[in-house]
Image (cartoon, rainbow, N blue to C red; front, side, top):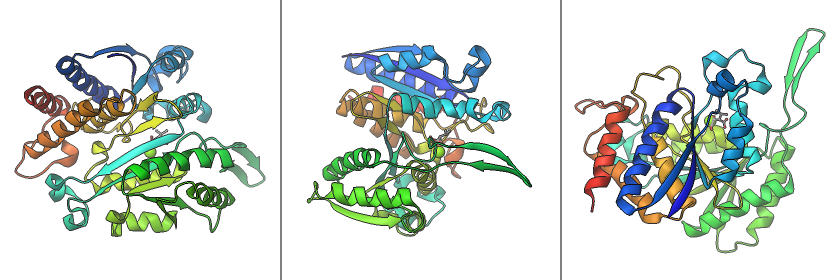
Length: 361
Ligand code: IPM
Ligand code: MG
């Protein structure tokens, strides 16, 4: 198959891990005889430095024309002082909005082999921890207007607006029901309906959509309780759907549960197979440029790309299995470092994964 993939490494460790994800796609391409055509473009702080804007129109046009986008991360301390509407992170929000990628899948999978590095008791994870956070990605407080700063008598006020429309909730909840239907037929909708009108509406719409999915059980819980249960009893969850900011926060929390954010990929899409694939960890400026970042989140994002955009299920599983085998063989990056096992860098970890892909016949 021929495929057009935009590659947007971005800033910080985004650069390092995206390079490795492309190496893995190349290994798949060779093994299965596909043809992936990559086009590279700038986004984030590096785009501000080179083109004067975090999301150059050329980058956006390229993304619109491609089947899939492999993205690293954007932002970093060098751009802390730019005005908020020009920040590198706004480019990430803008690209999600422009492509109308309203579903953001963040699969959370615990691995037995990483039990010793978990911040929680390993028996909480067992073999069973495997759930998905679906974060609404094109609406909510990150986009709400009005927003800004105003001067006040005794200082300044910064403000944002959280809002959701019936349509915005309907489409992401519907997509979540579709997914839950293919899994364990249980969907958890997470809001703060006891305090927020946008959440009240969310719950009402979710309840209404649920009537179209009588075979799927829906549970409504509050965000604070959900944050608690993710640590206290995570295996009760299978598919969680929630708003933009809640999903942003819950997915980082869940990342800690499986040992490291460095293991957590994501896929974002709308009504078509076009998708944007990115690790959820961000730019990690503290370790950027040292060659020690964990490439697995980016590599697993590439697996999601194969599965979601191109429907290459075997190829996606091949990548995921190769990651598991590399972990089982004891390869560890610094974020999942374990006594008695060798700590490797970004490139060596990918070497181990690529070797597994090449070996497996
Ligand atoms: C994420 C990140 C981004 C977000 C930032 C970098 C804009 O935290 O993908 O989770 O808030 O969505
Ligand atoms: Mg985040």
